[in-house]
Length: 449
Image (cartoon, rainbow, N blue to C red; front, side):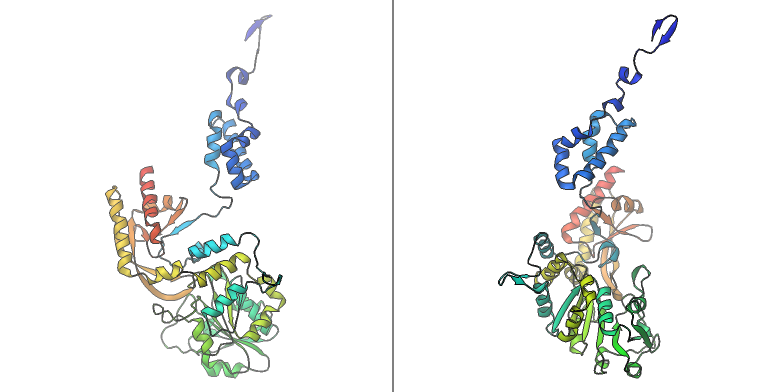
């Protein structure tokens, strides 16, 4: 203040005199031109980076960040990827975890997806230069994997496969289905409601625990469009029970669809009660359908196999256009079928003793770094609507419960399960190549506490 005429008047604003931080916030154009930030623009896109710059600038204006720290803060705040989804190490003990995207793709399938990200010969015959069959290589791989199938079709998931079959073969007519197979799947969806949404009428036969071939025969009539045998994907019925096999439902004058759900192409000795496509087709099913991202170990897709004429009627139905799989799915599925054994099959076949040894090695490493960790046997499950009731002998590393949340917050996240006042990291679904990463993630949490 400078006295004049007995009054005090301001000579300059406090901001100018003191250099208030908000006056020195780096400009947006200058930040975006910073070489390190510009490199992230090329990876993430200008809009996403600019939004991050704006948020960091506001922190500076609020006095929470020094102006000279803004460029580094922008780089630290940028996400690793343009998409918000985060990779997760599945240490839950659920082999096929629906909330985690079910089956991880093999290296061959990932490479096939990468190769198909640009323009491809999806529906072009490069030899003739004319339009070709969509995903011809994938369809051929499916027929080769299940020789009993005359033809194949791929849609975006197994529910879509059921909807397409029901619509094309039985819209406005009856579909015969056992009461013991009226399944509710994840997030409250019910298969009977899905079937009814196609315009077909559901004809329930038998009882909850007993449905015989005679029940189906008595129900089939002039208005029957389809018989459906649904896989009980997430429950079992024990005690006094009876059910008809698919071999008893053929020859009744209408197509029979076996919804196998879990994606076994052939019998699996470790899962003897799980139905498979080859057996169902040999037993006379006109169609089988299943998910590709379960025990098959591929991408999310619904696969239909069976009689050529029946599948051609589905392919020509207008609904197929809305349900068909995209080029990335077809590429990943073909590579899963033609390539090396996918991770899910490898994990399922691993010896329980080896799982325990892996858990013991992890626990020993953690204990050597002062962490309270022990290895113990555990029971895993197949999950994902496959092999209900089957327990898989596995092993886990037990940590104090407090580790669960920070491990889940990592990138990649490590997701275990809380049981008996501890955080269990089950190795059942963890790729052995990720064991060291899991250990490093635990050690990083310990250092931050």
